[in-house]
Length: 310
Image 1: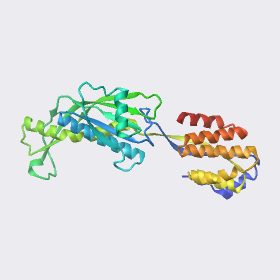
Image 2: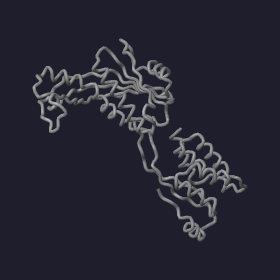
Image 3: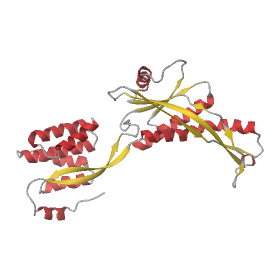
Image 4: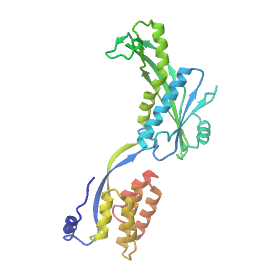
C-alpha cells in the first residue's frame, strides 16, 4: 500500500495553481463472477435434492458443502454462514421454474439460492492396485483409483435481481475415489468399495463449481480531488491508505463553504468514498450534489461506474 509523503507533496504543490488538483488512487475492485452473478454481500442458501439413491444423495450433499465453503472463503464469511438445506426430490417437479425457486428462496430466508439437482453417474471403472510406500494397516496397504463420470445440474435464483430469472448451469466431469485394500480384492469388492467412497468426492466437485461464482478482481484507478491545504492533504492521505471513513470525516467538514467549486470537489470525493464502501445509492446522491454545485470534468466517468453497480 502506498503512502503519501505530505511535506514533499506540499512543497511541490506550492509551485502550482491554487485550484484543485487530482490524485490517482489505485485499487483492486471486486466485480461479479464469471457466471455474471453477484454473490458478495448477499444472504446465500444452498439446497441439494435427495432421492432413494443414497450414493447420489451423499455426493450431492458433499458437493453442496464444498460449494458453500468455497463461497464463504471468497466472501470472507465465517464457516457455516451459508445455510445448507436438503430437500426431497418430488416426482414431476420443475426445479428450473421461477415459482419453485422463489418458494425455496422464501423458505430459506435468503437473498439468493443455489439448488443442486440430483447427480447422474455413468459407468464406473477401477484400476489395478498399487502398493503404498507407507501403509497404516495390512488391509489398506494397496490403493486403486476408480473413475466415475457424472453429470450435475445447478439452478440459481437471485431475489435481488430485477430480471427474476432462474439461471441454469450444468456440466460433466469425472470423480476419482480411491479404493484401499490388501491387494487381493476381486472386481466386485473393489467396485463396492469405490461406490462407498464416491459420496465424499462431491466436495471437490462443489469447490470446482464454485469457481464460476467467485468474485472477479480488477485493477482500477480512481481520482481524488484536493486543494493545497492541510485538511485536504490529511483526507488525501487517509484515502491513499484506504481509510475511506476517516477521509469522509474530513471531507464532510470541507463542505461547509460558500465556494461552489470546493464544495463540488468535497462532494465528489464523498461519492468516491461511498462507492468504495459499497454504498452505491449514497455515492449517486453525493455525485448529484457535486454536479449541482459545479460539475467536474471527471464526473461523467464516475457516474458510469456507479450506474454499472446500481
